[in-house]
Amino acid sequence: MKTNCLRLFFLMVVVLLAAAPISFAGVNMDVAHKLTLANPPLDVVSTPDGKFMFVLSEKGIISAFDQNGVLQNKIHVGEEVERIKMDPQGTRLFVTSRLGKSVQVIVLDFFVEINTADTPSMGPQNAPVVLAVFSDFQCPYCARLAPRLEQVLKQYPKSVRVVYKNFPLSSHKFAKQAAAAALAAERQGKFWEYHDELHKYYRNLSDKKFIEIAQQLGLDEAKFNKDRHDPAILEKINLDHEEGEALEIRGIPALFMNGRRIQNRDLGNLQDIIDKQLKKAQ
Image 1 (cartoon, helix red, strand yellow):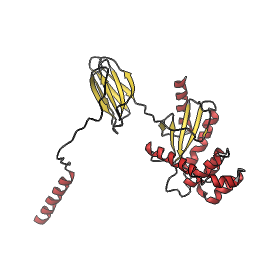
Image 2 (tube, one colour):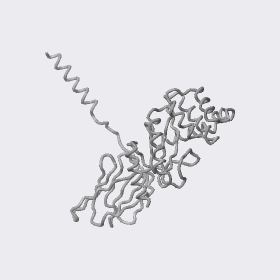
Image 3 (cartoon, one colour):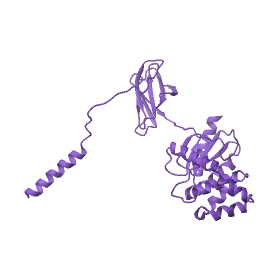
Image 4 (tube, one colour):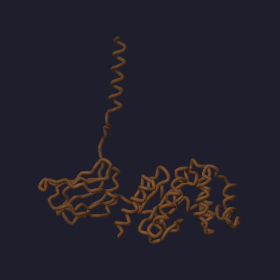
């Protein structure tokens, strides 16, 4: 009995020591940025990832700064506002006023810049809605999304542009080769036709299949084979992949509408979001 008690005691000590917070010896401090405001600051909050900071100043102005201290946006919320708080997800600001007996809820709509230059695309270059999809030709979910995007283009022929970005997964043996083959087909004006065939045969991709599709589409086979091994095409794929990693893409397909990540890729949801975006653009 005494032995069991001793074992239990030592076990509790080990657990408590493991759970104890790290005891720091000290702290160094450096000024990362100094933000210059037109009015005295009243309150400040940051997003959970630390990428954005929101400063409430007198005169009721909330200023949004990025992690480099660059001003991104401003909004006037009323001079009686005293404090701001952020929800744990970093998607909403709560703006409180004791004098006004009110709480304003501000929805944060974050977006990113995506490079669409020199990238395969369908739809008008000046379309108000741009759908950028990071995809992989061996991915079954990517294959399912492709026909939905085609339907969107048919429904909004003058308003939507679809941009294709390569994000081949290392676990897919032929994904990068397929991406190179599609870009080689682009040099002969057949990217989207080749794209469709690759998605159709995503389970059975191989070097033989790449050549079969090229022959089926009437491509110049010698040029096609030379181009798909061109270092410039491989570099283009790598740049797309690096951009996707910088955007912290963890799963594919990854779809962005005007720089905003779209999680629900059902056709009905895409139509709803596009309609709302077109109303804003009017």
